[in-house]
Length: 388
Image (cartoon, rainbow, N blue to C red; front, top):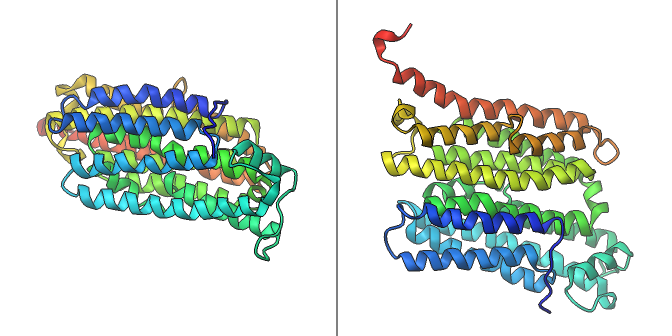
């Protein structure tokens, strides 16, 4: 174990994203957080330090300490300053992610013991090089190929819960709905990126052969997350739940970009992580402003809101357009790179055009759940005598 940290093209954008969103989240806490403020801001800064550690640590044991330490401030931030069901949401978040981390830890340690004397530390570059050189041996009678596949599945499960992907996504809407606005900004903007960052850093970098063998199941999970997450968002009336389920859909695009192993796919996935962090943070802050003024997040109760709060609603609509991937917005660039990288990746992913086309269909559903509510409110806002 050693203090081994560093930055590369994968982690640097996420470090910048973290240091950009934390001050904005703290500013957004000005109005909603009016009790135990010093404890709240201390926990926010403690969470930022651990997030930066996750993105910079290159020793597994050090990385795992930061990875687990993120749970502690988030648990208290939801459980103390959250909504009416805050205790349930905080415990569910903690249990889901902590159990997943245990499975991931077992899978990675099995790899380390399988490598034996070929590695002398928990350094991620050293372990990656040893795996690439074929140093993985038999452990407790388990053949190297089986051990590598079992470790890949264990790590994938552990990171998939953090992303989250369907069907291990149910903790996310509860956590978002009960969390105060600044905590929702950090949860959607940065914490979800821990899972996709770890998938890229561990699974797809250390065990690319196993990732290729499981390309079709992983692509199926990605497409299901895109479409099912968008359909769940379409059925919601709570603004926070809509944005929460849309995060599940957006992370599905990231998984699809990673699994195709192309330059545009991986680059687009990294771009989408940063773009989603900015867009989701913007959306939650806008929802927080509307909630502070109206004390409701239900779409049915917000008829005529654009006339009363034009700036806040305009920002919310701009975030919705970015989520839909309109050209000249960050959401468009990330999704476009992923689609370009995935559509022609038949060598890495069989039936790649089919998976890509299905994922593109998710954009239509996104447009539905982000615009239908606005259209309904616009109709209700018009006096009855003026309606056709």
